[in-house]
Each structure stands twice: as C-alpha cells, then as structure tokens.
Length: 296
Ligand code: RIB
Image 1: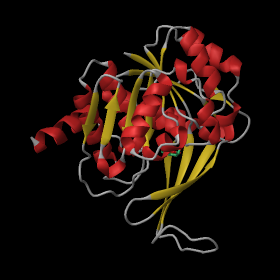
Image 2 (image 1 turned 90 degrees about the vertical axis):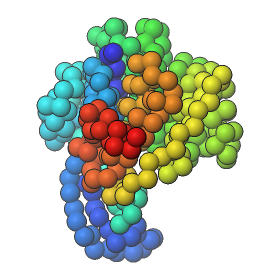
Image 3 (image 1 turned 180 degrees about the vertical axis):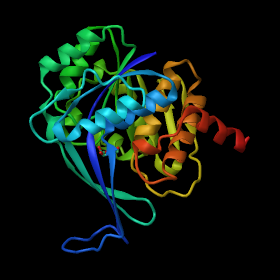
Image 4 (image 1 turned 180 degrees about the horizontal axis):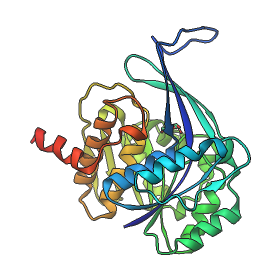
C-alpha cells in the first residue's frame, strides 16, 4: 500500500512545566528537549511503522534538513519534500506533569506550499492508494482536489481546527479522522454520536472520531463501532492523534474490520504517550502486537 502523507514538518521545542501557564504568569521549566515533529512527519512515520510504503510531501527550510534526514533514515521516501529559503516550522510545546500539553505553532516553510508543488506531487505519485493530510500547511484544499481528480483516495485529519477547516471539499474526502473538539467545531454538534453522524453526512464516507480516554468511534453510515481506550500512564500526549491516524487508516485500507483497526490504533497511541516526544516514540507494529498479546 502506497500512501502520500502531505503535511507539516516541525521542530518541536518541548518544555516540561509544573503546570500549564496562566495569562501573565512566568514559569520555570523543569526540562527542555528538542524533538522532530509536525503532523505530517509524525503521520508519515506512523503509516510507515504500521506497514505502508510512504512518500512524504511538504516543505522545510535549511534548518530543517535533519527532519527529512531523520524521516528518511526511518524508511520514508522524502525525495519530494520541498526546500524553502525561510525557516522550518516549529512548535513550542508546554507539557504538564499529567502529560497534557498546549502549543504555539509557527508555520514557516509549511505555509509556502503552492498549487504547482501539489500538481507535481500528484503527477509523480499517481499510483498512490491514498493521500493523507492535516491542516498545518497551505494548499490543503487544492491538494485534495488534485488528488481526487487523479483518482487517489483522500483522508483528512482536520487538525489543528481553524475556521477555514469548514471550507474543506468534504464531498471529495473519503476518510475524516478528527478528535471531539475538531468534530464539534466543524459540525456545531456537542454529543459524540451526533458529531459522528454529521461528519459522515458531510463527506458521505468514513468517519473516525477520537475521544481521548473515552476511546474512539468509527462510522461509515451503515456500520458504527466504538472501541475503548487503553489505560496507561500518560507522560506526553503529543503525537497520540498522529499515531492513531497512521495505524487506524493503514488497518482500514488493509481490509481490517473497523474494530480491529481502531483497537490496534488505540494500542499504538497508548504506547506512544507512555514516553516523552512524538515521532521518536511511535511504536513498531511488532511492539503493538506484543502489547495487545500481553492483554489477551
Ligand atoms: O500532533 C502533534 C504535532 O503537532 C507536533 O509534533 C507539533 O509539531 C504539531 O504540529
């Protein structure tokens, strides 16, 4: 299975704090680390670890070559990642002792994607089975339209939610994978079953709604499946959604029943949040299998 993951490449600057800061508050940081990140990079690796052949698409500045080098060393094709004269995107991530976070995102090179670049990616990868994208780059709408025209299946993780997310070409999206906040913001609904139904009606395809500690739900209009989350000690939840996304969509595309795909993805993200960092802590498929076997 060949997947194009079109998305952001970020340098994640992670600050461990005694609590998330209040307005006007100055906090001493207990620990500072720099990690590879960005929803595009993280999801590219999650798909690769799950078993897909992955082509990454996006843009970095000169200060971001180590991101593409790292992804390439981990088996992802980065030959189509573009280069900017400006800065690579970066994220300031504040993490509290419960592993919860808040972020400041600088888009940088991620926001320099042009329609020409999208056309080039689609032209080079017409044999792809799926394109996966999120909302941290420019030209998301254009890329989806171009992929759809080329007959490539489409999946969107509408994250982070901004008002423009409501303008996505939903009739051309086959899979939406969103968290509760994103789903509620797009649909105006507040209860998970209503959000799932409204998202499914919007795209006419398949919807996966993640509910944090409450698990996840899949619906394709005919079948609806709910799967509980695994209870683990969360050290850093950054990248949990990206890990879930890669594993879940790989499973569904591979023909796994939704129950299996969601359970495997939940296990992968449970393992990922047990360690600090995002992409570096995405588990391998063997690790996920071993985790699930121990529970059975
Ligand atoms: O989803 C987690 C990612 O969101 C982080 O790696 C950060 O870079 C932001 O893009």
